[in-house]
Image (cartoon, rainbow, N blue to C red):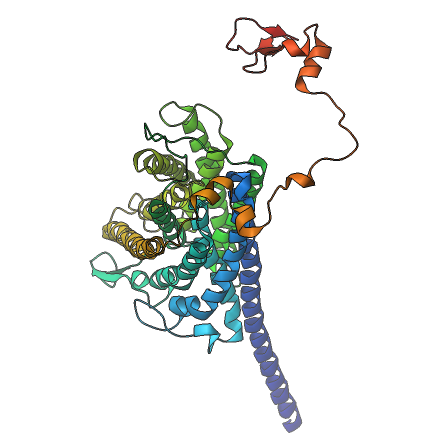
Amino acid sequence: MSTDLINLTNAIERLELTAKGLEEWKTSAAENMDEMFLVIMGIIIYLMQGGFALIEAGSVRSKNTTNILIKNLLDSFISGVFYWIFGYAFAFGAGNAFIGYEHFAHSGLSDSSYAVWFFQYVFAATAATIVSGAVAERCDFIAYLVYSSVITGFIYPVLTHWAWSSEGWMNQGFTHGTGDNSTGTITIQYQDFAGSGVVHVCGGVAAFVAATVMGPRIGRFDKETGQPEEIKGHSVPLAALGGFILIFGFLAFNGSSQGSISNPGDGAAVATAIKNTVMSATSGAFTTMFMNKLPWFGDRKWSFATTLNGALAGMVAICAGCNQMETYAAFLIGIGGGVSYMITTWLVLFKLKVDDPLDACAVHYGGGVWGVISVGLLSRDVGILYKWNAEAALTLVWQITSLVAIIAWTGALCFVMFFLLKKFNLLRVSFEWEVKGLDIPKHGEPAYPSEAYGHGWGEKGDTLFTMVEKATSIPSKSIRRGSSNLSLGSASVQSNGTNKTNL
């Protein structure tokens, strides 16, 4: 009997050790899953730097392509240095309600925290990249190095401390006494799941201030009437590819803001955020596309650029509440993002006369402002249209208060920074370089060198005019080279002349 008892005791001890080992493995596996989730999602978000580079390159003139590409390349590297030395410490180091001051240059940061650092770093790089599009084709390289360093090393990290650190004043919010629940009190906090305000309003305000202080590109506004003159980008396909990459990255940007994947409900939360991002992008794109067809808002064309920017504005808008919106609410938020984009574009360009080649302010500021406010309206948890009570009303007020703080902080510091750069003649390139292009004098690398084109084998194939000549009895030299009035079959296009050419 004694032997059986000893064997039973030993078996129980082995089971306890096995259970303990399994529990430790479970904890370790969960930590590894969460870290790998952040790393993989962060790598996808990093690809957005390539998206920004391509959309900006396609939207500027060919003479400035290399210049815009190197700026986008260096954004991630400058962010890496300054977010390593200062940014992460200001954002997530222990400190006070205003700023953190621990883990400078990764001092004392554990190995298990590097995944979080990397994930937050790619967000910081995104905030800085927004500005480069607004100052494209005339920003001096030194000014670019300065503003990218300051935004990623100080301006943006302080905002993330306010909103996403447990000590930040916006995240802590305030407690309000009511009789609505068992405790008699409610806690109101700023809610910005993926950064409509923290990332995009910050970047949009910085872009607007930079473009305003720097002034418009030469020839952007008519010197007599003051009306904007169109300056076309050189490659719609490049801009399109960049746009698709940004849309792809946005899905990870919003979905990964859950921050983990190992807890119950994490997968559903990630899927909800991505689903809502898709819906908001969809409605934003359709809204701007159709608005641009109206004579009061656009040029009555099916504009690709306007449609793409509407999709991006919709995705920006849903960032704040993509984890807590019903599908139809996400669709409505996308519509609001598209409308906000169109209104902001009109205000910035036609009323304020600010030249923003990429419409960065309209996409990120316009979409971001609406996104922050929409949480207080349409969130299924605290939206005032769902919960008509004190908590919902106070949440809306706190969202707006926090939004004002983000705008004021970013706007004030950016104005000082860009004003000083302008005072020291470091902000803008010379007149000659702006007119002739920045690729050759700044970088010695034209994106499209003329000597790289052509071959020695002669040209084959028909031009439009020789094709018309072969298909009709009309000599090619008699075909008008200006406004065309060619028609195919029974379909014809009227020209400025009175005749029609039928094929």
